[in-house]
Length: 185
Image (cartoon, one colour):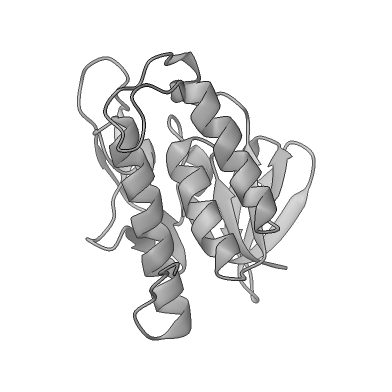
């Protein structure tokens, strides 16, 4: 049983995973290595960078996650279900259980069909046909959060990073029963 499983290893998923792992939560990131940002060579709208590639952001995010003892597995999620003790994620190679889930993958989320609601997506390039419906804290259902293109049409890198952080902070707030803050000094 893990504390948190993040489904999707793009910018939103990595940012959520870094937050939860840094908070001391046993965090597993499930990734298929197909993030949309992989093909972006020249991101210029992020504070702290004149220009950075999507590959570099993903590489540094994975490195940071490992620094905080987060685990990464390259597996595709095929099912998500509630159990008596939490949530069960089934992948193409095994099963995992967690107390909390963050859905942070772009594309199809049929595996979560019975647990979350969906809303219509926005038409256009890089847009999803539908999104996971969340409240303002990125909560989709009890102990399930969503971030990035899973729950928004705003596909900018900085938005994805912010959405991942927001989902993680609200998940940790929910878990701890008080506002979660992470301030490095």
